[in-house]
Image (cartoon, rainbow, N blue to C red):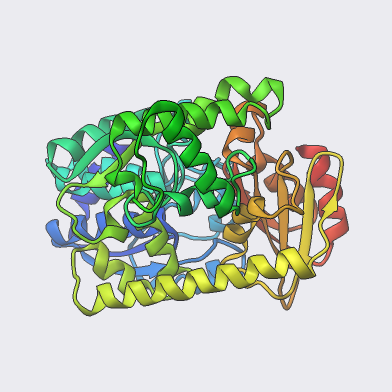
Length: 454
């Protein structure tokens, strides 16, 4: 338990009659933080209102009606931009896991694993929010939301959740809500045929990427070699575990031909690992938490917070129908964006990274597109990528790298993008493998500083 959790708990208990504003981010971690804190507020009978923020910046901080409330709780944001809160005179509780700014403000109770020598992979915003809820009593029915937030933030990058997330996972299992399994680390375990999951597997770029003909031949080869009967049209969840172990070992053998020598020992981490499923979920796109996270993004990236919240809280019916519609539209947008990157955008390679600039991809999905762009031949999968989305004033920048690169090279994109954005009077931050920033027009200077900081 983080030390400041108890301080936050005692403070809330002393102020149960006060008016609260709960502010959260809009990704999966932010949405699950919101659900946890909303349910906690209801159980404590708090007078609370709620607000979503896409980013904490000088302009968005002005949208927060601090003066209308006695106490502000921020989850999955706040730590990296404490200087923006210096003028706020109200009491603030920050529940975050991003790299904190080196400032201490007397009106802030700051709960963050970094402040106790832990890493950002130990806990996500929802995990920290859950620890607060847990401090008020049992509340283990909320643990599943924390694990969903952690998976959404790719805190299982090493193939499994670690740190304090591990203890929360135990609560989620104890509650009967979650099941943990060992499986291949391919997206779409429950909702996609195996050949499609392999089509988009880009942790290692092999001759299977975007090549269904090669994939079918490859599965036939494995079947013949090992006397198996793997059906490429079955989903991973439908395939026998021993068959998947053989398939995974064959994937590692294939990948050896494509990766730098220093990366080889990390290959098993991106092929095998833990997966997390909702025990009683029947809807295929919501069973596996990584797929559930995509469904949330398909809503919140376009401002439809209500649908994501309703489905998270167990409301189905029209909201399940709407989330499926959102998912189809989201995937269509991503396909069009990737086609644009492949056909219309110049990929510029620097010594340590590569980048592209576009005014055709919305800022709300530019980070996802950057991640998925490693499935495009024109992108060098052995270098990090910066994606610039042009705004009316300045740019939204997203930095990404493949999981294998992050594990093998100890890259910290969050640190690099934060330092580079500060140099040009922007603001940014994030994690080692995924980060973002808003910067003014000085793109060339930012690129120079980013390369120096990487």
